[in-house]
Length: 461
Image (tube, rainbow, N blue to C red; front, side, top):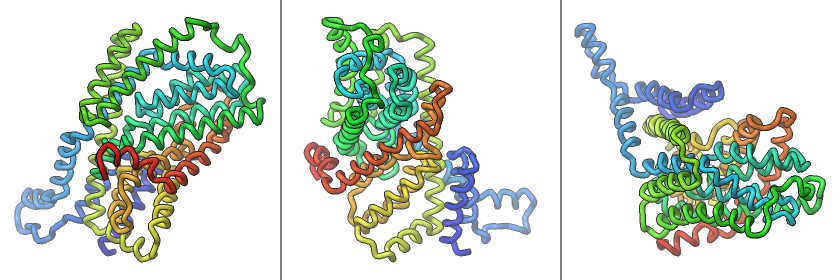
C-alpha cells in the first residue's frame, strides 16, 4: 500500500472502531500513535548490532512521541480553548440558579392566548438559555424536566411536545456563546469573535422558523396543543406577573448582553468575557438563594469533566490529523474532489451532505475536529470563506442531535421522560425540524448577508 492509501485505511478504521463503541479521544490518540509510528519510522537509525537495550531505545526513538507531547502542550496552552471551561461553568451555574424555571413559568402565562402557548414558552426559554450556555445536553435535560411534563399534563401530543424540547435544546450549538464555534475557531484559526457575530442572526432565524412551525401546527390542528386550562397554568396575575418577568428575564438578559456585548464590541476577549459571565452566574445564583456548596461543587466537577473531554479530543484529533496529512491523505482527498470538476455550489452541497451523514454515527465534536480540517484546503480552491462555511456547518450540525440512530437530544429526553413516552414518538417529533434546518441553510446560501452582515459591519471584510 502507498502512504496515501494507508491514510485512507487509517480514516476508515477509525470510523469502524468508533462505531464499535470505543472512546473517541483515546481511539484518535491510539490511531495517531500507531500509524504515526509507521509514518515516521526510519530503518536507517536502527542499530541491530548493539545491545538489547540499544535496540529497544532505537525502536522507541520515533518522532510520533514528540508530536504527541507537542500537541498536548499546544492544546493546554491555547488561548482560544481557555474560554471553554469558563463558558461551561457559566452555563452550569446558571442552570442551577433556578432562573430558567421562573422564566418558563412567566412566558407560559404571558403567551397563554397564542396557539401552542406552552410550546412557544419552551422554545423561547430554550433560545434564551442557549445564549447562557452552549451545552445541548443540559438544556434538553432541564427543559425536559421542567416543560415536558407540563405539556403532557396539558394534553399536548407526545411527538409535538418532544420535538419542541429536542429542537429548542439544540439551539445552544449555534447561538453564541456556542462551545462548538470555539472548537471550530481553534480548528480552523477563524476568529471566534467573528464567528459569534456571524452566528447571531442565523441562530435566531432558525429559532424563528421553529416558532412559526410550532404556532402554525397548533393553529391548523388544535388537538396537537389544546388551549391550556386554568388549572394547567400558575395563578400569577397583575403586578405579580410583571414582577416575576422582571426578576427572571432581566437578570439573565443583562448577563447575556454583557458577555456577548463585550465580545462583539471588542471590549474583552472571549476568555475575559467568559470569566465575567462566570462571576455573573455566581452572583445571580447567590441572589436567588441557589448558591450552595453542593451546587457549586457539582458545577465545577461537570465543567472539569467536559473540558477534559474536549481537550483530549483535540490532542487526539490533532495528532491523528497530522499523521493523516503527513501520509498524504488530505492531498489525496483534495485531488479527488478537484478531479470531479465541481462548482462551488456543488462542493458546498457535497460537503454538507457528508457532514449530515457523519452526524448519524458521530457527535459534532468529532466532525469538527477530525473532518473539517480535511475540507479546509478545498475551501481555498473553491474560494469559499471559512467563516461562512463554519456557520453552514453549525446549522447543519443541529441535525446530528435530531437524526437517528445517534440523535443524542432524543436520548437525553428519553432518559428523563415518563415511561409511556416511546423513543419512536420522540424521533417522529424531531423530523419536521430537520426541514426547518434545511430551509435555514437554503436561506443562508441565497442571502449570505444573514451571517456576514454583522462581522463585516463591526470588523470589516
